[in-house]
Length: 52
Image (cartoon, rainbow, N blue to C red; front, top):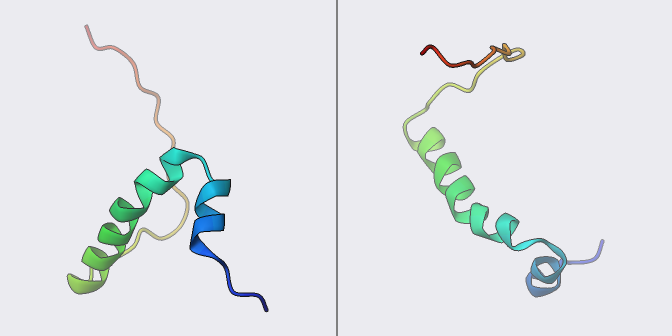
């Protein structure tokens, strides 16, 4: 198995993926530290509309 070069990986990804990585790492760390339960099953789709 070949080790992934981080710079080659980053060059191949759009910039918004690179910008999201710190937030995703922080979210995973907070879920682990505070033992936040992960949602189970499928999510429900709700229609959004204007109330006014």
